[in-house]
Image 1 (cartoon, one colour):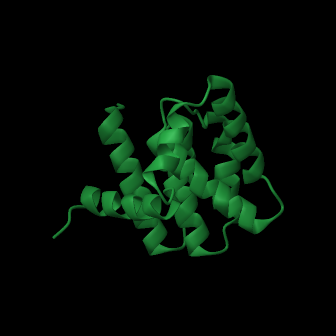
Image 2 (cartoon, helix red, strand yellow):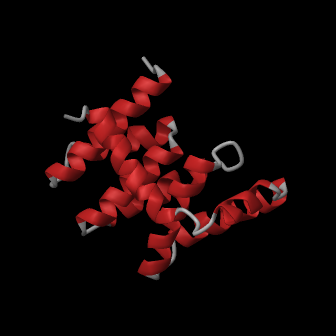
Image 3 (cartoon, rainbow, N blue to C red):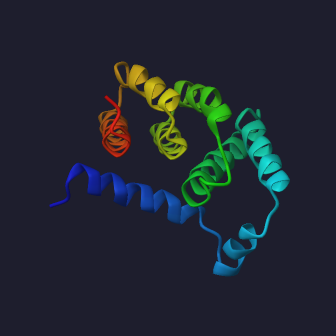
Length: 146
């Protein structure tokens, strides 16, 4: 049987697998990018989170999860937190809220987790509530925040 932490890890791995590049060569090419390139990427993804096109917002959510998880030392999506929370708030589908939870967890800031915790109280889906609790538990256990 999986513990809650392992279940979240498996879910995060599954979400991450959906966003991974098709080859390891594609990932290696990111390592050589300049700091200016990373800053431009951050801004482009943050802007895309506010797009009126649903598919663009969906891809931006996937990019936040991928880049924050794989290149957290090169990107900082702190500025994306308000948009991620708006996506969560406006997410009529459970799947959209799950992706928003994954992105907020990947960003991993206190502001992201505090915003998620506030929204947890009114979440109508047991699945999303459970995932959000796992994300919060992982964040606070990992960061030893008192």
